[in-house]
Length: 308
Image (cartoon, rainbow, N blue to C red; front, side, top):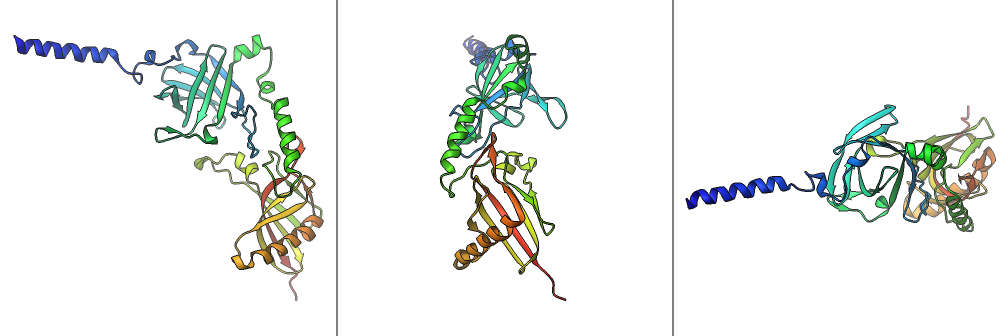
């Protein structure tokens, strides 16, 4: 009799445990569920750093671009620019209010039928990184809310704000005072050839398999300039700041012995001053139409006239 009672008690406890569930298995135990917003299509209208702007100090710009829709509690649909259609992703609950879908982690900060606010975060192991990688808030508005309540267009809401422009104006004024200071220009430096003996190639480093997006091409712009009929053969790769007036200031020279750096740097600066500035119109980098100092990697290759 006692033995049967023990078995019965154990069975009841097991049954109770199964019914209780966990936050991972039972969405109703979390701070919210996605059920109330299921089937509503949301468009990302703004993406901000914690400073409240679309830009950080280094010039990186957050561009709102996501379109999402909750299909069910464990499925999120997102627009795929590559496939030109909505694509379903497993919506995995992680911990707290952190979820994962489309290979990204998000902390849900607000949820309603009109809007969503997600913090895009970087998770290393099970720890949320406290650096700039987690310093992004994404705001979504429902399509119906944009059209019928705001009576606006998503593309207008996605544009940089007056506050963004003021931030870039202030940042530009500061770095333009010193040719050693710079930040990335969303519209990078342009070299426009004035001669048939000079040409330029802008190198793209986009590699989606390694999460290198188009932003790398303006954050770390790279150029190769080739000059025919030079005084002699040369090849130099440098880090340079192109100032807001198009002046080129060599900061560092690569691939030379330490003891030769200063001498080679002077030679590279001379090539930039004489060849590049005379054979090209150099348009400075701009952000929101505002010219400012920006840093580039520049490879200058000269080929001398071959003697008969």
